[in-house]
Length: 196
Image 1 (cartoon, rainbow, N blue to C red):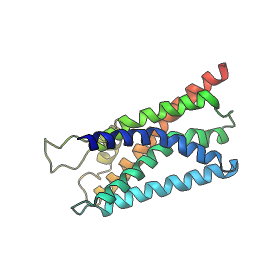
Image 2: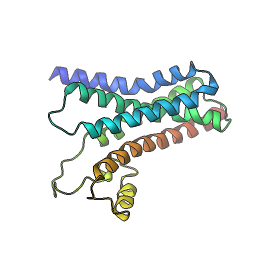
Image 3: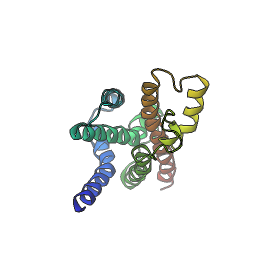
Image 4: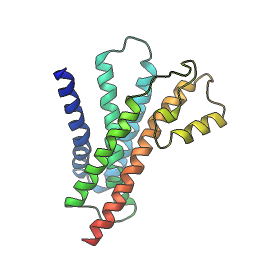
């Protein structure tokens, strides 16, 4: 029991600290190369997660593979949190957040990772009908219903290849939701930063 509690506490600390680590690493890069490197790393992490998820359906799951997927998922999450600090400052020529406001903004985004990760990882069991395909809304609190409506309207639900479409949708939706939340915090803290 104490190993589980220790592991959970260590995981939460890692999830909260990872965006700060990534932000620091990106500030070491030249300003012109930050966005291309960010896009490359984010794309690779998303592709790795999607590809690995599709290849890992055969039981029993290897614990090392499980931890690797969790690390990649947390990387995607942390990249979504730092996205506005890396991309928007350069794209919109706005002054960069600095000091206390930047720390508070990244910390707020880091804290908001936890409910999104929980929604993705701690999923309710399918009690109604296990034969039905999974719903995006079960994994994505914000965009899930929209993704479900689009998948149903396009006729993807229940068709061959839906598992791949579902995995891509959940992974991209997870990133987009966190990036939107982080952007809102970035914008709010930018306003407070200007008033200081």
